[in-house]
Image 1 (spheres, protein in one colour):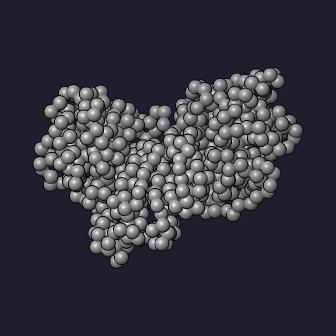
Image 2 (tube, rainbow, N blue to C red):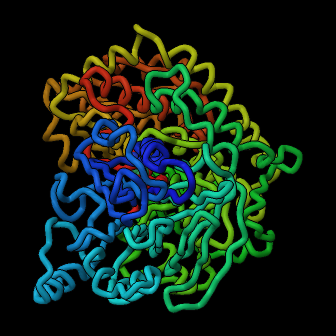
Length: 621
Ligand code: M6R
């Protein structure tokens, strides 16, 4: 979603800010802008400083064209905006300035009381230029400004409710940025005689590895020499500098035309990384050190809730089924945005997993806070190291997918599923699962990366064959059904989500038996139905459902276990995936669905890595 970068130092800031904004492009946005503190006279700063604000609708490339190559100024802030309040226009793009254009503000998040603040400021004679909630910040800071930038921002934020990551520059203070966070991440980074600011450490990776994450309700004064952090209530705080992980630097496309394709093909490696050292064949069990739970504590858990959004929620559905099967632990997965507001009943022996690729999803953070408020224990299952969810949950595990840049999540899904399967094995061995069953499951899991690699070598880049045939059917469809049962119902949901978000093809997913309770009325002779039918205990039942849609003319694309020729015969297009035990099948059956979305998106000319209206991390609720 929206991105923030800032720089104070000795170099010209504009190229650094534009580079930082480019690195944040993957998060999704619809306009971009920057504000530079520049000398008022071309002869130098003798006549003081002013602000240069440049904004453009569209990609950062448009902003790059608009920014003069020799734009002076060694202090500035840059922003990518994902519209919430007000349309996608240049006027609504950030930065926003005060009436006399001496203060510029960029803002991520939502100011919830902006309407009343705006009305109040308008009564005082302030004229607003944009429709955004963020503009109130510029005018409020001006109102409270009496020479001290930090105190002005602090006073302005005292009357604001909502979420923010903000960065503010003042023409009167040409070597300073003031920033604050509440629910929207910010990180500061130290260089030699220069200091950086960003909403995502990706933007800083080429400039510094010494960083500090701000906490909620903190405010920071940033200068060339470093930073001073305090709480909004005035208390001073200091944070130890952390080292930015090396993996953050490797977010390049390489030889692949799109990040999504690269990330699909990275799955054998990302999955191996996720499993490394965690499955213990000797004991038939597993170890996730980050959970730090003794067998006795595991036995004491009465219920597990897995909270997440989108693809992460789908991984959670698989995890909940695995936890029930392997550990006989009552488990459910729930969409975080629903959980956080339904006043859930939580007891102290409930355990929750907050599952998130980015670790910054606002609704998942809200669900974590709700569970913690009610005394539940929450552990993170997160990809991005050091992210808000990782830090908010006292314990947790990283899924180690590496940077996922495409908006459509692929490798994070398989790593999330794998991490939850490992957790189920670990919990299972302390509860109901015997060593032989545990060993067999663990060994099957450890063999998946190789099976994935083989499958991707055969089908991943093929120019002919069943994936191509299936995509031919899908791109002509008015809408597509995805069906499955058990863990394959979760895979069906994931396949439908991928095709919607990347190819913009309307899709529905249903547990297969549910079709006859209504949705089957939609089937006609044009309707592709993607059925996920691994050779598990539900195979025959699901094949009966496939027969039902076939009988009504549906064009069946069937994902089946290698060698299951009887199932394959029911399909117009049959796609085999390697055999695996039932709970593990999602790691393999999702691969063709990811390729469907990628190839259909490509055929339809979609913006594969940055689909319209979407953001990589959804930092507003
Ligand atoms: O970063 P998170 O895993 O918390 O993100 C959750 C969803 O926003 C995300 O999975 C989204 O659904 C993806 N774009 C799906 O491909």
